Image (cartoon, rainbow, N blue to C red; front, side):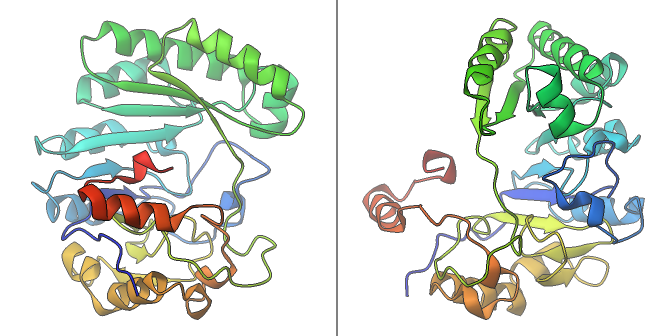
Length: 299
């Protein structure tokens, strides 16, 4: 059995401050989510942040939701950034991030915003997202310009899913957004959440859980952000500290099983095909060579 390089503290912390979303993406299971409350209690998100101050964590205030539906987000960013070691990143569909809110979060200290636009032609966008094409394009363009003019080091990324039949559109998308000078334009593959048609276990280790923690809107921690139906709960921050969960027996057991390639023994992971084409042998070899390999170098 080969152990993954789990750090003593998490490097990335995702906090689902709301379960709401303004979009109706056909490929997203958010519309089936039933967990409540609709918005995370303030004492809960503050507890997660307070218990992880000073560790150099990157906070991502979203999981299965649109983060800027939460009107408290500027306040949350400011609270996180009271820790000078903290980084704040977002993925957003862009529609709720109006120019006014863009200016607010830039002033609050946001470090990265990734826009999932997923279409250059209006008909492609409308089918994928179900929100206002004009508002999204205007908001994204405004944010990129404001971030570039702010004098701050803010990563801006515009993404599109590689949907079949959109190859030419992807080139138009790239040209359009490159001219507007974001940090990067990215094309991603459409992935499947666990239990979306998979019928058997793919018994491999997993990269997703190496250095990340994920907290649902009700304060429970899940093993993975792709756990849309709460199949593998690893703790509850209302009853435990963040580090008690990170170093707890449930997490330890899940790590041991995944390190051994025994996804079949974890209910959530037993129907997950993530990283099926990843070369784990190359990962281990590079790790042995320099001990500094990061997931960003490999994915």
